[in-house]
Length: 229
Image (tube, rainbow, N blue to C red; front, side, top):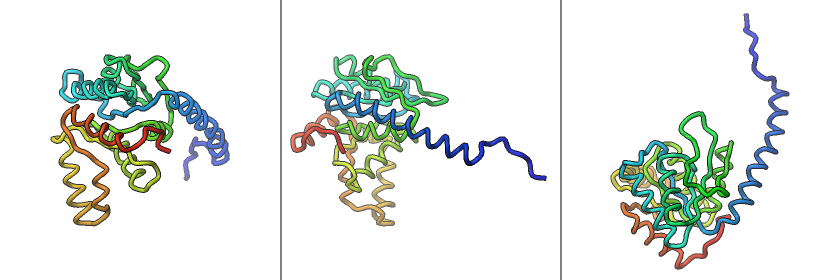
């Protein structure tokens, strides 16, 4: 005998989906209104699990400070780990410190270094990702997990397909990222020809805060600072 399930019926699901549009719209409107006022910023991504006594936390903090000293603000995902380090560095340097928080069942809580008027909360990952891409003048990608990779490859895809204007994508940590980049070059490019050689020009691999700044400054000597779409 077929068991009765207590799941919602199709009509109820369709009704809920329709009303969800307004919640999604509200997140977009709130994000656009607040972030359109922040000025040029660079996003810093990385693991929420990185501790303050670890090398990459300290490096992310240094990177953020130098980003602010060179005229940019900092955007992070608003949580602990590398995100906290990015906001902390921006805060210490007296610059704009933005946090785009996401409601998660674990790991995520906002850090204390975000400007009070620049902390935004999202329920939807896809809305949050639009905000990162639209209002960032560059991505600084520290070692992280699936979420970090998601942001990285989304940005590469959007630039590669000309859906947004190009901006610097900087991977920090040769030891961490070189294996991935070797696979991209040998398997994606050479073995399967799934990407073009010029696609690799989108990505920079560095180890120091000064290298991050050099790439950002060099790029924006030629291009204007503006939202990306």
